[in-house]
Image 1 (cartoon, rainbow, N blue to C red):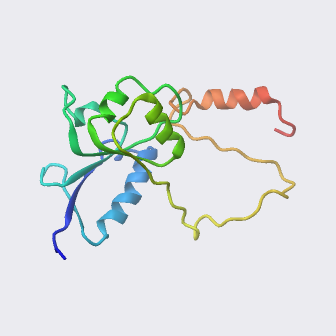
Image 2 (image 1 turned 90 degrees about the horizontal axis):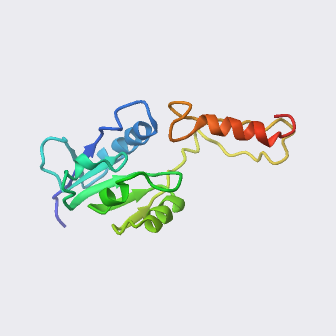
Length: 171
């Protein structure tokens, strides 16, 4: 058995902010850094076996001429069709696409992504989020939507308008 560790560079460009990718990146970086056989190396050392980009499939990671990057793993997702312009071409230059849902994996394939795709969902910390059956509750159902602006990719405004238009009882 080899003592050589797999060197992973952590691409935190979009994951350094206060968005959803930042939350994901923080959790995964912590978990990956304590795994046996893994060494997290700096972004600028260029001494890695793989680089994980928890971000949208941004083109500057693959270059202006879209050079293949078998060492690049994009961890990304998108919740609507069609994909933004350039995403398919950028994703097809990566070595692997890592997405958290079957919907995203299917969407990427239907859109023309030919790079291998793995679906690994997010685990749930049962100490923080305990399950309880809500089916028999008499209280009103509450909905929370999160987005960085009213007209962002999450389209908070349209979600609010949809609930109003639905005219649900006690809403």
